[in-house]
Image (cartoon, rainbow, N blue to C red; front, side, top):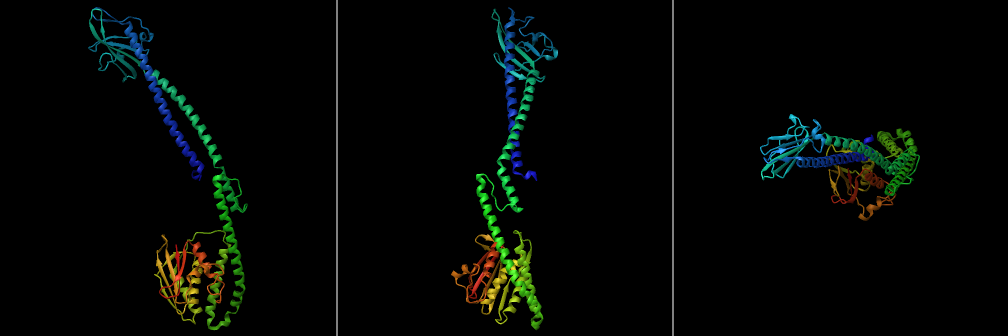
Length: 447
C-alpha cells in the first residue's frame, strides 16, 4: 500500500515537522505582537495620564480642579472607549471623564506614590493606574490616583488582523514547501525507482542484468545484485543440465528393469520397490531442475521413519556383510525439510558407511545442539567401524568428482551433493574419526 512507500513516509514526516514548526512560529509571533501591542498601549495610556496631570489644577485648599476640554477629544465623548478617573487618598472618586458612565468606574489597587500599575480588568479593558502626591503653593500635600482605561478592542482587532494575515501566508508557504519537498523526493528517489523497474524487467525476462545509470551510492548494490543474479542463473543452469542428463540416462535402464522384473523370482517385490524408489528420485530431481527459484521449506518429516526405511533398504543391498545397525534416535524426531533432500543427504552418508564398514554402523541424534555459537534443531551422526578417511583428505572428497579410493566403484559426487545440500538448507557437515568404532564419523547439523 501507499503508506509503505518511502516517499509517503518522508513526505508525511516533513509535513508533520513543517506543521509543528509553523504552528510554533505562529504562536510565538502572535504572542510577541500581543506583547508589543500591549506595551504600545501602555505608553499611550501613560501619555494620557501625563496629559491629565498637565491640565489638572489644585487650589489653596488642595482641592483638584479639572477643565472641561482635554487634549484627547475621546475623553469628552461617552462610549468612546477611553476613560479617565481621579481618586483621593481615601479612594473616593473625585473626577471622571465625560466619556465614562456609572458602570465604567475603576478602583485602583494598593500602590505607593510615584508608581504605576498596568493591568487588564474584568470588563475587558486595559488600565493604567498612577499614584502621585501633589503639593499646592501653600505647601499642602494630597495623594491622588489617576486611572486611564481603554477598551481592548483596538489591541484585539490588531492581533486578529495579524493572525489572519499570518496564518494565510504560513499556510501558503507550508503548501509551497511541501510541494517543493515532494518534487525533491521524487527527484532524489528516481534512481531507486529505476532500479526497481529494472529488477521487474529482469523478473519478466526483458533484461538480463541491472544496466541502468544509477546514483553512486547505488552502484555497489547494483554490482552485488548483478553478481548474485549471474551466480544464481549459472547455478540454476548447471543444475538443470546435470539433472536433465541424469534423468535422461536413467529413464531407459528403468524401463528395461521394469519390463524384466518378472524374471527376478523371489526378489520381484524388492526390485519393484527399488524401481519405484528410483522413479521417485528422478521425479524429485526433475522438479528441482525445473524450479525457477528457491522456495521456503514448510514440510515436516519424521527422522526415525526415514532412517528406518534407509537402513532396511541398505540391509538388503549389503546383506552379504550382515551389517549391524544401531539406531539411537528419540521418537518422534521432527525436522522441517524436504523429504527428497533428507533422502539425498542421509542416503549417501549411510550408503558410504555401509560400503566401507566391516560389520557395524551407528546412527545417533542430538536435539537442539549448538555449533560455533549457532543453535540448530538436530545433529545426526553416522559412524562406522571401517578404515576411515585421513583428516587431510576429508575436505578433498567434498569436491565434485573426487573419491577417497579411486579403485572403488562410484562417480565421486555423493559427498559433494551432501555438502551442497546441507549448505543450502542452512546446516553444517562435519567429518572426522569415530572414537567409538574407529572408522569414519559424519555429523550433519540441521536448522
